[in-house]
Length: 430
Image (tube, rainbow, N blue to C red):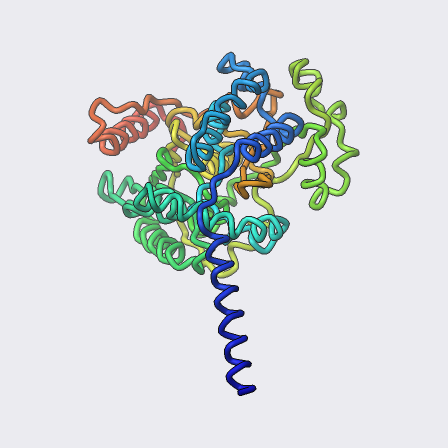
């Protein structure tokens, strides 16, 4: 009898626990009050910490902060949780900032694999049950797109494309994304890295190598440092200074200051009036920003070289960029342009790319949704905003194809024209 009673207690307890957990993950409609509270919380943090209100107003004539009541009314009109999610996403979309958005269930999974054990550990733990709920909501409406992590979405096709534009002379390497599957042991990245290495080894005697990131939306700096720069590092011997320092402006909001203070203890001592380009900054920027940070784009780059044998490539490298080049791919473009590792050709990289200092996240208390936002403003050497300018190529060429279905082939032909033109003008290319 004691045994039966004991088993019954265990069964009942397990039943209650499983039902409780199941109910936690079932979609529960947020009340209007909860939705407004979440929006107010997000708005208050962005108001004091988001970095690009000035640029958005200058570039698009749109004062995002002035539309608070309009946004709240849109939130009130949402009929269900999914409507709330999309309305919130559309509100952030008006900032024209690819680094500011609501994490979908897929992005939550991907970011969990990167930040789940770091400074955002508690944030992701608190939102775990909520995102199981959001995943159930999305599964009822979408097939996979918003549920899959972004890495899988970028691998719908081969991520690496190689070609020989002109035999024994011009080799071509295209990388569509620098995202790394860290959340899955980097298995796919290791295969791609090996494919790139084998290709580079096979064309090491070519006088020209073209690396195309014109459709690359970014990812990890580790990708291009380890998979591309490391094998070609003999080219770095031609570089006088590998320290590619970038300056970021920080507003005085406590949220972002507290977040950055863990890695930059002396942040509060770096007031922007100490910047050499302070006098070049617009008055609105001087009034809105309090601190600055200067960091090297690629820290400890040699750490990526240890396990990779160098390829003795002595030719000329071109990096092709375009308006779709963004984030981690833009960092690569900046590295190439400032060090001379490669000649950057194409169109300006994507505008609305605000900086690469850190990934700023905030969590909405009722919905559990996590919002990514830019907490720093990257400035160029002349004090202008990188959000506005993007990376300006060394050689600008039009990238808009006559035939969209022949885009890559047209780009390859334009590259050949650039090379032939430079050779005929005797620009010193060997």
